[in-house]
Amino acid sequence: MSENGQATRLAWVSAALDRFEGRLLRYAQRITRDEERARDVVQETFLKLCKEDPQTLNGRLAQWLYTVCRNSALDVRRKESRISVLEGRLPDPRQSRETDPAESAESHDSVCLILEEIDHLTQNQQECIRLKFQHGLSYREISAVTGLSLSNVGFLIHIGLKRVRERVHRRAPP
Image (cartoon, rainbow, N blue to C red; front, side, top):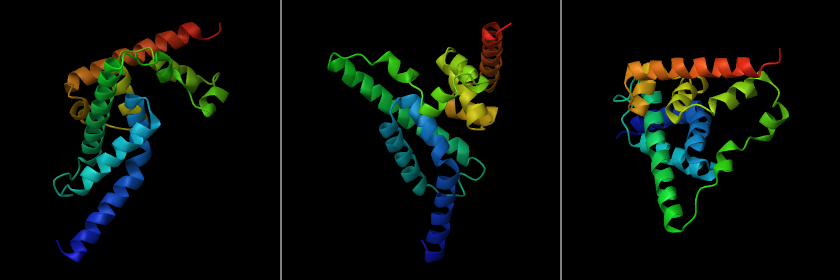
């Protein structure tokens, strides 16, 4: 590869890193339930991106990054659960419920209430809603990332949001 081609690829990867790193870290952390493992997953994702040809991912960069990140994070989670079973330990269910200090300080805010209600949805509903609203992916991109059909993604988001709305409405003071 020419020096100019390497510089172009480096600029492409650098731009992708700037744009997606934080969002992918939050996404991977949701799946792995561990900040350090999420960092490893995202690092691995960008290392794989370095080996890709920018032309082959033209217009599909976000979809590709989220798919690779998701698959790596799920692999990490599966590996950890196998190790936990072998060691006779069960994962701590409270670990996934931990909130950061900013969320705790704003616990009465409606955004926190909605996020809390999203945690009560099925895993598929949670993932589709988060990919749509927190990460800005299209239904088509979500379908490609999760392996769910396009219509299933739409259905999961619709039903999930309906349930969140109902639960928030019930919890709201009269």
